[in-house]
Image (cartoon, rainbow, N blue to C red):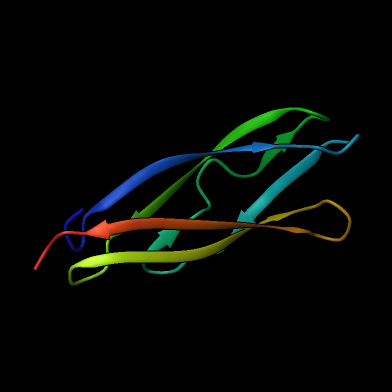
Amino acid sequence: MTPGQVEQASVVLRNLLAKPVTVVGGTSDCTCTLIEDLPLTLPPGGTGQASIRFTAPPGRGEFIHHARLWTDADGRRTIPLTVVGRSTGP
């Protein structure tokens, strides 16, 4: 990726609980947005996909971005996500 390049990817989520879980939102900042395709309700044992969009930081080298999705399960549990990439620009 070059600095400032915007990429989009899908995250597959699986509900391991015996009741439906709704992913209601996620962290968002200037480099990573996790709120597309939400809210998303996952049936018991079911899966679903949510899109994330992220921007490569300035400079060369690897980058790591930590984010969280928020759910309505048992008092709004969170799902941690890590985006890892490499910036190849100047």
